[in-house]
Length: 372
Ligand SMILES: [Zn+2]
Image (cartoon, rainbow, N blue to C red; front, side):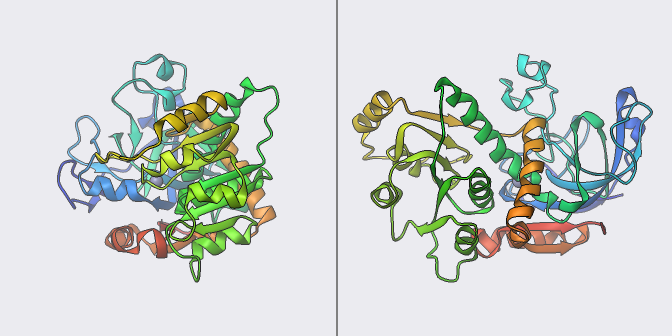
């Protein structure tokens, strides 16, 4: 079969390869499922791996097949798979419990304390930019046909679902927590999906991005579902509370770490700040009002939590939100998929979009690998 692979440690090494067809029997215990990839998403992670910033090949392989955002159709199932059948639509989760930490052992691999991750298309496991893959049924999420066209957004949405679930779990310390207002920092694909998820929970949501709102698709997507959009060129996050009031929940998804300190000052009493940006640089920040922030956190029982990756339950929550979004805001998710590239052969175009399309003109670029 065809796949797109990189050689770890070598910049711009992505190439089309011909590799062995996966088989149901590759998976132990009769639990294998052979899946034909229909669509595969692309994001900054894929670009960074192709830039050799990180990425590890599976043991015994020189290359790593890229791709973690996926959607496909079951072709064949092993003898011990009863929950899926050929023709079913599925999305695979990304991280596997291959480590030794207690969290791997109890199936909470998204909370692993190991330093080595096992993630499809990222670290030690081949990804989904391929024609087929074989996977254990335990890691496949069934997708209703009604959301087939946008289900490739489930993996990025699962990250947000985990963040929100963590906030809900933490806030059980309060006997009553009914968050009314939220700020979402960053309106790239993760930020927009967060605006959506919080609007689906009935919250008043304020999105913030760099771009000015006029003619900016991402701003229009915010306002089309009843959220506001402000450019931080015109209204800083700190200043925004004078207009909107303090926030019960703030979700950070900009990739720009200094904004975290602003976000910390905008929380309501008992409020929670969720951090999701992986900021790999070495930036430091001067002029942080540390006494003020510290006092606000102490006197207001505020919380800050980091969140990464997602588990099966977060993907399942994401399926429900995708279906609810289609019911409430039909077509909105489809507008987020701004670039559709036909065929794996055109992978150079995907990288061109990731490099030059930027956050602004491209919200989400996907491969259409095969017809649904
Ligand atoms: Zn991604």
